[in-house]
Length: 267
Image (cartoon, rainbow, N blue to C red):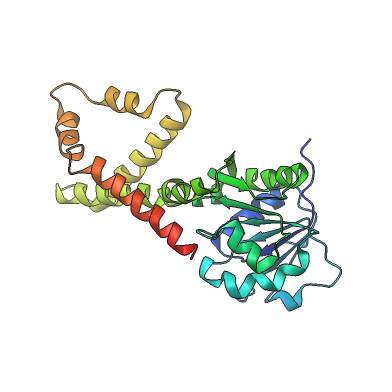
């Protein structure tokens, strides 16, 4: 039986924070306080939503403080929650913000787990890669693992520097997949296919291919080759997409650019 999730303080109630909160509630969340200046409606009786840190009741003792604010707001936001240092683990899903940088705002004794989820968390199909900072206990790591598993698969790394390319690949990855669907739809329309049918074809092709990939133990390259008949139409298309100056080079450049931006956000 999965243990109930202990009290959680959620700082930032945007799409990702909301997705995580929904996942925790499905797994038996005991209590939570969500802090967001937009003050959205509470999703349930176990969750109290307040506009700022001043609204948190004095006796609320969270086991974890989940930092889901925009990274550019961290300097102003994080010091408001430094009072939980020493009592709770901080789980950050902010892109680019390093453990050392967050400790500078929360206190040098803060136990921080840095994680990067992605938007399929909204349907509990996300992937999160996490790094435990200094001073994170086995119990705190296990709690963070439970919180992240509520929205999908979880993997851990021992090198914090890997979180930057993780952000580029899986954090931003859904946008790249959505772009593929967008471009397939557009190209279908250009070839005379009605817009409604083009949209259906593009979306279901991407979704179905993803499901097939998830269900298969084969390497992605093997699955690609299985679709590619010699001297056929797919082979002709892939000759364009896989040219030296096309997808292989562009994807590498895109991931490198996103990785660099993640490092820039660390300041």
